[in-house]
Image (cartoon, rainbow, N blue to C red):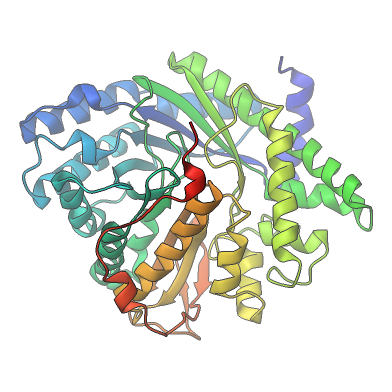
Length: 454
C-alpha cells in the first residue's frame, strides 16, 4: 500500500536530487490493424493510437499536479512494424509512410517519442524485415518522434550476421542523411541482443507480440538520488554501501509504482512494468559516472570500474524488485556517454575508452549507448563493434545494445552538441584495424551451447 508519507518522503529527492519519472509509456498492439492494403493499414494505425492514447498527456499532467512528481516524457510503443506491415508493404516507401503515420499520431496525442519502427531478426530476415531496415534512413530523417530498433541476436538463436552487416551500412546512411545536423538522427536508432518485450526507454521501446491490446509501463530514473545517499556512507564497508543503494532504489521504485498505478486507473489500461533504470541526464549531479566516483573511483574507467558498476547494478535490481508488483524492462544502470556529464568528463580526461565501455556493458543495464565516433568510420567497423556487443549479450544471457553516432565531418578531438536531455559528446577513437573479412561472411553465428535448456 502506497501512502502519503512515502510521497512526502520523495519530495526532497525530487526538489534537490533530480528524481523524476522519466516516462509514462503506453504500449499498444497493432496486430488488429493488419491488412493487405497500405492506405487502410495507415488509417487503422492512426485511429487506434490516437484513440487509446488520447488522454496520455492529460493524465500525466494530473499526476504531476496531484503528487508533485515530474514526469519528463510521454511515450508510445507499438508492435514491431516489421510484423504489422508484412502484408501491406510492398516497397521501402510503404514502410516510410507508416513511419509518417506513427509520427502524426504521436504528435496528435502529445507523445514526445513513439517506438516500434522495429524488426526482430535474430534468426533470419523476412523480405518484409529487410525492407523495413532499408527504409530506416528515410523514415528517421522524415519524422521527428519515431524511434527504431532492430533485435539482431539472442541467446536462443545466435547472431544474425547478415543483419549485423546491413545495420552497419544503415547507420552510416542515417548519419549521412542528417549530416547537416551533426548526424543527430542516429540517436533514434538502436540495435539489440535479447531485446525485452516491454521496455519504456527509447530508442528501443516496442510492444511485445505476446502482450495485450494496451499496457502502461513506467520508467523511473534516480542517479542523483543514489549519489546523494551514498555521501552518507563514505569510507564504510561494502555491506553498508550495498544496503544504502538497495534502500534508496526501493524508495525510487515506489514512486514509479505509484505513478504506474494511478496512470493505469485513470486511463483504464492494465499496468505492465516499472523499469527502474539509472538513466542520467546532462544535469550536474544526475550522473551514473558520479555514483561510481562516490563509490571510490577518481573517474569512471579507472581500475575497479567494472566491479563498482556490477555492484551498483545488482543492488539497484535487488532494491527495486521488492518495491513494485512488476519490475522489468532494462532495470539497472545506463552508461550513455553524451547524456552523462561524469562520463563526458571521463572521456575527455582519457580515463575511459570504447574498449572499457564494452567491458562495462557485461554488467550494466544495456550496452554501448550514445557514443559519438568519427564520421569516417567504415560500415564494416561499425558492424564489428555491433557484433562484439551482440556476442556479450548472447553468451551472458542478458540484454545488450548499441547506439552509435558516426558524426559526419568530425573526428577525434572534436565534440558534438545534441542539446536537451541528449547533452554533448567528445568524438571517441575507434580501433582502425580491419574486420572486413569477418563481417562479410554470410549467415549466422550459432547459439551458445548453454542455450539448449529444456
